[in-house]
Image 1 (cartoon, helix red, strand yellow):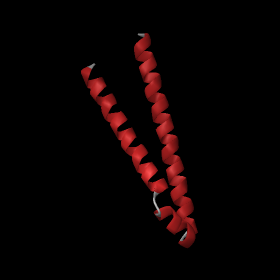
Image 2: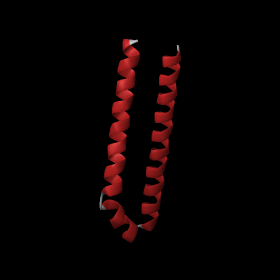
Image 3: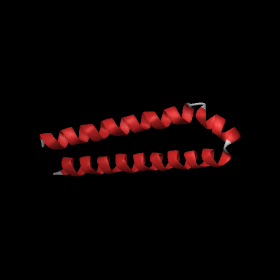
Image 4: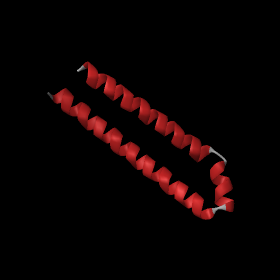
Length: 73
């Protein structure tokens, strides 16, 4: 049980770090620069960011389901 808790805490920590990194990329001037000079690179970067956002939602949903199952036991 203690191991599960530590693992869960680590997962949440990594998810928060990933969220911050996504926000930094979105808010940075890098995308604006690339969007004017390298349109293809900008488009692929946006696709990668959107993929990470989808993965974040999936992980959060899975963690929520795991919590619900544990509470119902």
